[in-house]
Figure 1 (cartoon, rainbow, N blue to C red):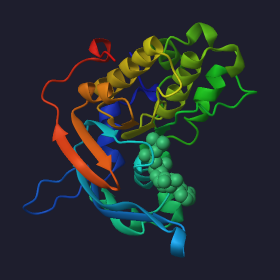
Figure 2 (cartoon, helix red, strand yellow; figure 1 turned 135 degrees about the horizontal axis):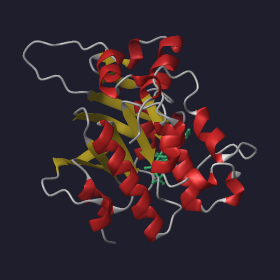
Figure 3 (tube, rainbow, N blue to C red; figure 1 turned 180 degrees about the horizontal axis):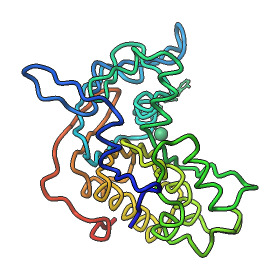
Figure 4 (cartoon, rainbow, N blue to C red; figure 1 turned 90 degrees about the horizontal axis):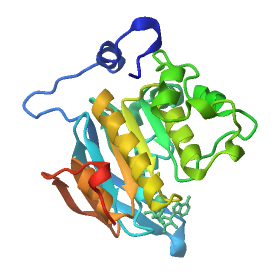
Length: 260
Ligand SMILES: Nc1ncnc2c1ncn2[C@@H]1O[C@H](COP(=O)(O)OP(=O)(O)OP(=O)(O)O)[C@@H](O)[C@H]1O
Ligand SMILES: [Mg+2]
């Protein structure tokens, strides 16, 4: 349903977007976190937030990152997203290390390959819904068709409204649209349902689940909500700056089947 404009298939773009590099012996994982460490503050007030994070996420995986407040989830997501940098260790995506990229390459990497959904929607108040989504397509080589996307998100009839004329769920759907219109390889979501009620949260999770299935976008979703782990392929639990658990969920539920 969400065709790309220009008649180019998303598959061909995905294949071309990141050069694949094969390594001998070891299976190449799509997203690798290697020995990630991060501290904030200096001297007495220095806090080691991430104490050495190692994890591997396969292409197309739906990964849920759980952990108590302050455990470093957003910090880790920001490092994956190239918004913040690690003190030690590195992220590699299809064999490319983000720490080897200069500012320009990092900007291109973020622009081409990453979609970011935040807890707060951060919409531009004086642009309508359609325009807010189109902002995300700016400079993308392979954007999805905006009208198709508006329909898939249930926003087509609201497309000429301003954000403050919409409900929280509709605003979050707009923010999802803005993140996915460029058809990103990786969709990073930081508490995307944190500000929403039960029913709307499930709708939003269903949309993210559908996008993961339809486009094979790799999803990393941060949440405190333990129930959401049931819709993941992989669950990573963070506590006190280290990974406490990292496992494949063999009994995946749909967003509709979740309950909390
Ligand atoms: N820029 C910063 N400067 C100083 N300390 C920071 C900064 N960013 C995060 N921290 C600290 O790092 C720790 C982890 O923060 P982070 O935002 O990653 O937690 P979180 O797991 O996302 O929590 P929450 O579930 O509440 O969003 C916290 O103690 C926080 O105060
Ligand atoms: Mg956070």
